[in-house]
Length: 347
Image (cartoon, rainbow, N blue to C red; front, side, top):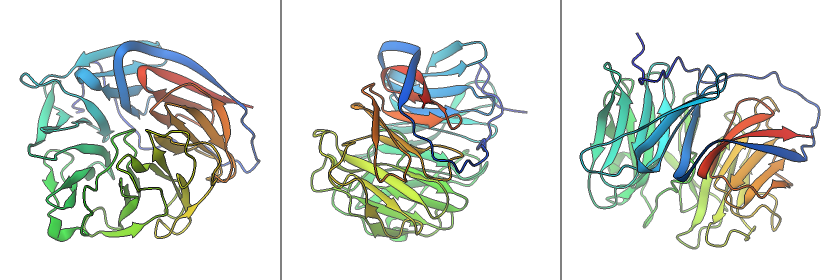
């Protein structure tokens, strides 16, 4: 029996594959339709469910579910004692939904047997700040956060999210001073099969080929001289080809060393689109079913599209968003300050 939220978090699929298309598309426009608006809301974490419904969690403890067939929203506010909770990470298995707070205490909530959300992990302390979360499969999941005690914070579950354990620093590559991740779009982690990539503020990629059992780290050419610079988002189309985007949110027009790609599973990276827009963006995603050729990046300065593996980009819109997830090769949901929207790519 599924242990779901009161307003029906139903069966979830990990991916909906679209038949690969080899023809080159040239997307020139994007239609933006707001489907949820709240001037006090800020959303950086969204998840698509198997019935094409959309789940989210944001600031002020707000979370919810959108049913596109009925166009109905059902929302709630998660509370814990007197804390005002802020969520920037969500994840799911086929039976449960998870939300992770930022700052200390870091708290993971999981759907329980009685229809309520249970606390399954709580961590307090100086420097505790978690940034992203995802699952490899129904039993195994991972969340990552800023450095504590001179190493990146990585917690892992092997029992479907019922319990979480923090990897000791002795089992991780040495961290750099103040190394962490940006809680910008819940895309600091990418997983494909057993492989995992984690992007940091210091422009480094932590890599595990065995679902977090062992780790190594690779440098990248991403801009990283300032605390506000680094990799904000990564995506992998398959186990070889990936893309990273970032920059400096305090200088969003800067477009040097903020876009990069890999073709060897993240061991080496090369800069692309140098000194060309877009500048800073908080989230990048591959367009599904397009053989890795097409990407869309979003940020508070707009929406951009590439059809040549990220070598060149077309600015589609000035509409501001923090994060995006694709439903198919033409439709996506995006979230940001004050709204969640449906995006349709058009030629």
